[in-house]
Image 1 (cartoon, rainbow, N blue to C red):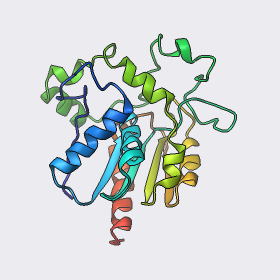
Image 2 (image 1 turned 30 degrees about the vertical axis):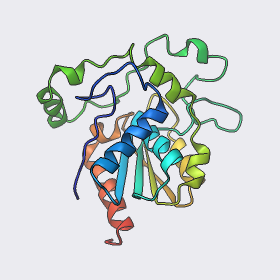
Image 3 (image 1 turned 90 degrees about the horizontal axis):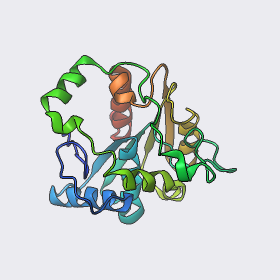
Length: 219
């Protein structure tokens, strides 16, 4: 496979503009990348807010250029409600105004693989100095989004991967999300927190490669 790592706006080595701090822009940035590289068909793999970026892209541009998707530990609706109890722990319409004023729980259950730590350090301090205050509008827009209708319209295979020990939402979000998709499936990685691909890279790689092979008809 050809692997393309997308540093989203205000993430990694990309610029950190004050404009476009919303999910719609994140989706449009992804579309711009796909068009710039002239990609005809791609698998999208997104973790956390990166998964929501995939849904923002599909919501506006559809699935014409997609083979399939993998969503890593991200519920499609972070706000809990009567019809969706799989949102962020303690987040609802009543708590929303002040919920993100306090620090979020530590996301990882396990320490990341040492190779991943070395890769982060090799990319420099800019990668580690994330502008939490400048990107707060993006976080709030991310938290307010409800992608469930987009899931229902997604006609390519989707794999939802959840960490069994994620501190942000119940692991059952993966099964519930898969049920919304015409071609959805789910997997839960035992012992992992929010960053499944970092904390349990071997387990995640097995799931990822099996899914890609199945969609490509290679299994």
